[in-house]
Amino acid sequence: MNAFPKADHVDIMLLLEGTFPYVSGGVSTWVHQIISGFPQYTFGAVFIGSRRGDYAEIKYELPSNLIHLETCYLYDFADAPLIEELAGSRTPFDTIRHMHAMFHKRDLTELENSLKVPDFFLDPVSGVDFQNFLHSHRSWELISQLYQQRCKDPSFVDYFWTVRNMHAPIWLLAKTANTLIPARLYHTVSTGYAGFLGTLLHHSSGRPLLLSEHGIYTKERRIDIFNSDWIQDNRNALQRDPTEVSYYRDLWIRFFETLGRFCYGASSTIVSLYEGARNRQLDDGALPERTTIIPNGIDIDRYAPLREVVHETPPLVLTLLGRVVPIKDIKTFIRGLRLIANQLPFVQGWIIGPEDEDPEYAAECKALVESLDIADQVRFMGFKDPLDIFPGTGLVVLSSVSEGLPLVVLEAFAAGIPVVATDVGACRQLILGSGAEDEAIGSAGGIVGINNPLALAAESLRLLQDPQQWKQARQAGIDRVERFYKHRQMFDKYHELYHMGLV
Image 1 (cartoon, rainbow, N blue to C red):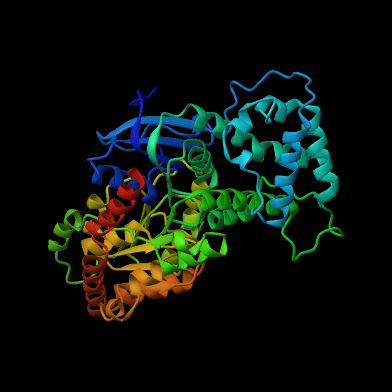
Image 2: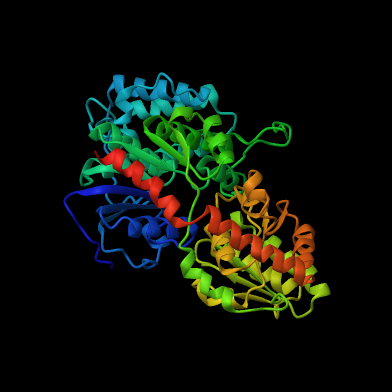
C-alpha cells in the first residue's frame, strides 16, 4: 500500500485519468514535467482508474511539490448501497430524462445547471443519489422508457446493464468532488471522466478549470469502442444495416461526447498541442475564444549528450517506445520489421513499453513475432529510460493509429535520431515541419499511412540504407527541436495560464 501525501489545500489540482503516476507514457511524463517545472506552486492530483487491482505500484518518483494524491476507481463498488425498495422523486428524474433528450440529439445548450454540481448526485430528495439510481422505481421506469423509445437492440438486459455501467462512475466522481480538498485552480489533462470531475469542481467551487488535451479523448475512445469485443450487438443478420454502428457502440460514443461538451463548457482555457487538434475541439463544441495551442516541449540538454556517439552508418535497430496496446498498433511495427528483415537480416526491433495494460494484446503481439519467424530480431524490453536505449538506436518508429504531439519524437530528435511515424496527430508537423521557416529545415524522417507495414518498411529502409539521407534527417530533427520545442517555451505559456487562474 502506497503512503500518499496529504494536504488540506493546494494551488493546483490535477485531474488525471489513466495516466500519472500509475501508468507510464508520454502524457504521464508530461504531467511529471509540469509539476517539477513549477516548484513555486503546490500541486495535488486525483488519479482516476478502472479498478484498484488493474494497477501495480506507482511508476514515477513524486515531486516534492506534489503534496496531495488520492485515487478514484470507477468500477470498485465496495461501498455500494444495500438493495432497498425506493420510490424516487419525480422532478430530479425528469431532469435526467431531459438530459438524455439533449444527449440523444447531441445538444447540451439547454442542460440544467443542477446537473453540474455534486449535490444533484448526492442528495436523495432534491436530486438522485446512488441508491436511487440503482434501486428506485423511478430509475427502472426511466431506463424502461428510454429502451422502448430509442434502443435499436433487441436485448433489454444488455441495455439495462449498459446504462448502469455507463452512468455508475458519475456518482463516484460526484462523491470525490464533494470530499476533495480545495484548490485555487483545477487542471484536467483530458475530457472524459476526469473532465467531468473538473466540471463538477468548477461549478461547485467557482474556481477556474483549465483543460489540456494531448490526444482528443473522444476520438481515442471512439477507436477503443470500435475495436472492443465486449460491446454487444444482438441484432440478427436481417436487422443489421452494415452502414450503421451498433446501437451500444453509438451509445458509448455519444456518452463520451457528452462528457466532452460538459468539460468544454466549464473550461476557461482549452489547450491543444497543434492546429489539427484545435480544429477537432471546435468541431466537438469548444468555443474558439477559449482555445489556444501550446506544443509540448522537452529538456533538450538531457538528450543532447547522446549526439556525441558518432555513427558513420545508421545502427540497424528500430525502436518503438510506447505502451503495448492496440492504439499503438504494435502489430504493424512487427509486420514492418519482418519486411525489413528480408533485406537487412541483422536488423533488430526493440519494443520499449509496459505490457500490463492489455496483457491479451501483448500476448497476441508475441505470438505474431513467433509466427513471422523473427523472434531473434524482436525484443520486448518493458519500460526503459530512453537515455539507455537511444545510443544504439538507428530509427525511432511510431506505428500508432492515434497520437497527439508525442514526446518520444521530440526526445528522439534531441538525441539525434530520425523518426518514421504514421500520419496521425502532429507527427507530420514534427517530421516535415509546419510553415515556411519550419519546413525549410527539411525532413527529419518519414511519414506513412496507418496500418501499412509495407510503407513503414519502405521508409525505414530508405533511411537505414542511405547514410547520407539518415544524417540529413538526423540534423533536421536536431535543428527543429532546438528551434521550436524547448521546454522553456512550453513552461512560459503555462506560467501565464496558471498566473491568470490563480489570481
